[in-house]
Image 1: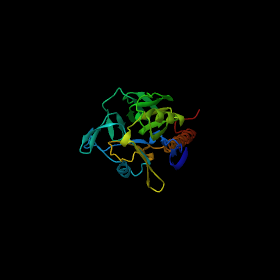
Image 2: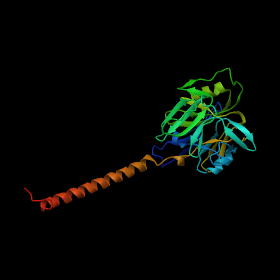
Image 3: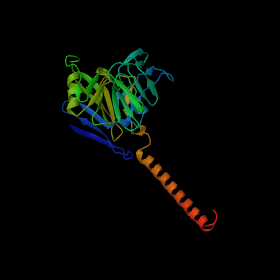
Image 4: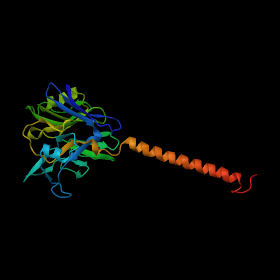
Length: 275
């Protein structure tokens, strides 16, 4: 594979990177820290479970700090440019339980940056972002796809985890089983399918601000995009550490001042006669 671009956020405590990789097989990976995952939707009304269908370039324009986007999970087209989502998604601005809570896998991203993959549509305690995927492709490094199904060479899209806390958006034109095997060859330990065919599309914002497009050329509008957003992070651990350090210094200074005052007072009998 060859890395064609790299983006690094200097304010991120662990200085992890956004990296795009292209493989000879046609597989494209966009790797990033799990905390940067951000579901993007446009509800038709506040609190509605019906969403506007949006093209990838529109979504990227609406979120100018997003580095990349991948089409989200499968949906039902309601007509009139509207759709509802088949599978659970929860995050900033959305909490949709979906319709099939026993299917596939849910990726939960905790505030610490740790991840947890659980069966069905399940949000675990402390999850900051949760997205359900169907079908499951990879579980603990094993291809769980039936090689006799989805044998046509079509566009495929998935969310992938490599090492703990490192995710990737993935697209490739291939049979499903071959797509999954290529992800495993690249080091994937977990993967869940988003949607394929004309919906399977990924976009990346390059250093000059232009968009690089991968996947289907149909440019289909979909109700959810999974975005890579460094600014979606909570306050960095470095700023938290600084705050705690300043608090500790203030406590030490205050204690020292009180100790000196107590000694001065004792010396001059302010707390009673000295023995």
